[in-house]
Amino acid sequence: MVKTTIYLPEELDLWLESRSASTATSKAELIRRALTRMQQDEPISGDRPVFKVYDSGRSLTVDEMDEAIASRIAERAARR
Image 1 (cartoon, rainbow, N blue to C red):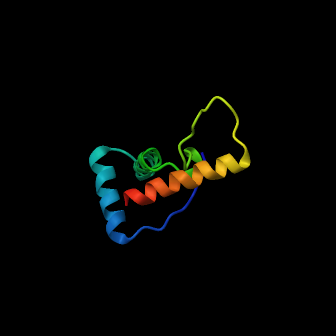
Image 2: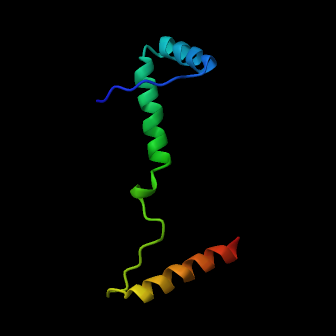
């Protein structure tokens, strides 16, 4: 593990202290659990593709890929 330091608003620290005491769980463990849930709910953009991946059975040319992406963007924009 890597050690890090965070600054919390007083209200949040008081809540964390109370939760830690009531669950017999360290503040650090509560923070790790919360961050793990956040990571699972909101992966960073590198964790999943921005555009759906299509398997046409063949490689696309750069121009075909550009057209496919532009088409997908236009479809999504039309739904808004």
